[in-house]
Length: 147
Image 1 (cartoon, rainbow, N blue to C red):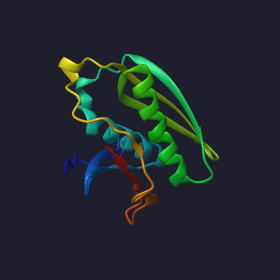
Image 2: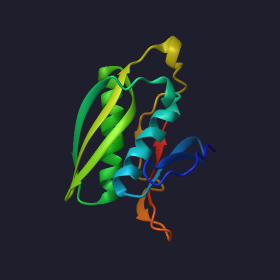
Image 3: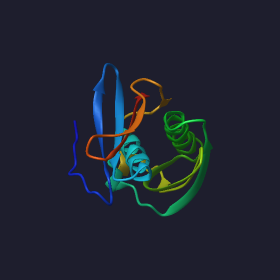
């Protein structure tokens, strides 16, 4: 399991084990940074996020009745954009407005030789789905993705 140092401003991400699939978790001082971290963890399932140049912005808007469903919609929107645009993303900016998420994901077209994609993520699931604050006040946004 990868566990970068936590940075209160930038947040962080990690993977957690789950049978044949993989868990993604974003951790941040705000719900926004936790969602951004979960998105980076999603990219890290596929390739090293540091290998992806954040050159092309892609706007994404999602709506859902609660934070957990919004996380699944957000990650599935990223999976959709990666598949249809043949891109990978490495930088994210998320804003919330009631039950909607307005975001920009920056990335570049996939170059198989350089990015060496490990797996294809099929989608985010409701398994181990959680968006909450821990006892220290950090936001944690997580779920399992189907690979």
